[in-house]
Length: 284
Image 1 (cartoon, rainbow, N blue to C red):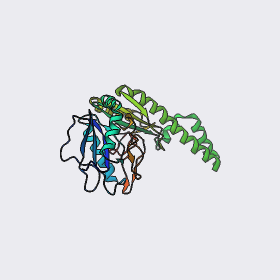
Image 2 (image 1 turned 30 degrees about the horizontal axis):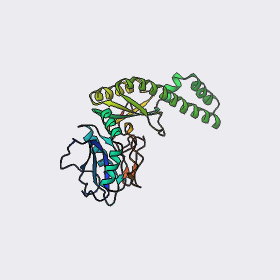
Image 3 (image 1 turned 135 degrees about the vertical axis):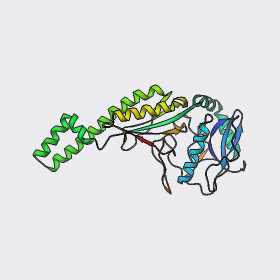
Image 4 (image 1 turned 60 degrees about the vertical axis):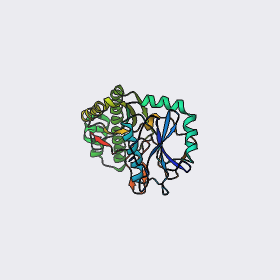
């Protein structure tokens, strides 16, 4: 790794962290990842691959490195594709925000991010008709007097009803799950979802959190489908990247967003604003 040339920045950790010599990151072959000390902090860096693009293998390499390191200590993750001009630029950026970084690392100690998305259950039309008198009347009207306009009205009523039931259930889930988390933030809207939220969960409560999601999903399977992704690097609970770092033009959306970044080699598993592990679908 050459400190005089451009560096790929994965994240920031405490200066006393150590990395196995085998630690690798993005690129083909995968670049060796090292620590660049900056006072009480250190940046996780590697050389910049000459063909850096948002390929699935590199998105996952970035994600998996941060996830693995996060099990051993707090990490402030950078989004995929953050590049600094040289080691001096990294040092300046990290030093300028050192108090903020140190405080954030303290908040993230022994914690992880879990992302939850909630969607209407498209197969629950029968339950909706059974429980919703308005939809039931529209359905009866269409059966008695079939028409294009009637079918359109019924379709709209069904879509709105399914979304309403999912939203109500998702709000209930949020009130239940927030008790197991230290913090919760709502992410940007995701097409087809009524909820996109990220939770900062103590690692000791991780299994309880997952079990609570599965239990709620099973109890409300006619109202909402829940998809839980995690553990993730804490993208949604860290400061923004320093301005000194460039973003690769081929980078996907910033970590912390709900969208799955598309890559040249297909769709990368979705996460809050960055590459993520494959979601586990519960209650589907």
